[in-house]
Image (cartoon, rainbow, N blue to C red; front, side, top):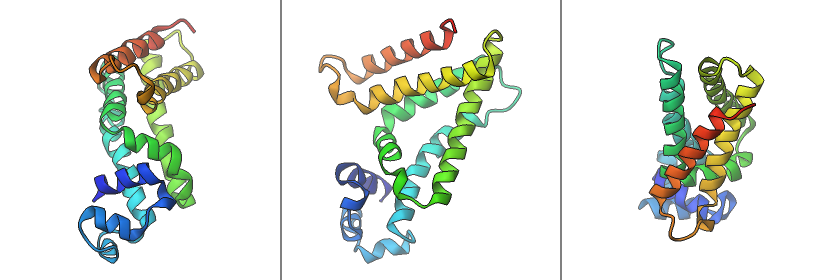
Length: 180
C-alpha cells in the first residue's frame, strides 16, 4: 500500500490523487484505506516516515562507535536512500508542505538530528573543522547526493546507476576532505 501510494503521489502530486485512486492501486476500495490510515495525510506521512526509518540506525549508532565508521555509515545510508528510495526524496521535497504543521516540525527535528550526527562525526574526524563548517559540509554532501539523484533523468544514458553512485560517493568523500 505504501509503495503504491508513493508512486501515485510522485506521478500525480498529493492533491492529484484521490482516496479511490489510492485504494485501487492497493487493491482495495477507496474507503477501505481508512481501515489502515486515518486520512490521506496519514498515508503520505507513513510514506515519508520510511525515510527516517531508513536513516535512524545510522544516526543512533552507539557513542562508542569510531567517528570514521559513523561517517561512513551515514554516507552509505544517504546513498542508499537516494538510490533505493528516490521517490521518497521527491515527495519529501515536494509534498511535505501539504502536511500538518506538527508533522512538518517533526520532520525538521529529524533532519536537524541527522545533520547534527554528520557534523559531530566530521568534527571528530577533522578536528580543524569548526562545528559550523562541519554542518555546512554535511549539507553540501546531502545537496550533492540528493540533487544528482533527483535529476537522474538528466544523466547521460551510458552512466548506469552503479557508476552514478560510485561517482557521487567519490565526490562526497572529496567534499568531506576539502579544505574549508
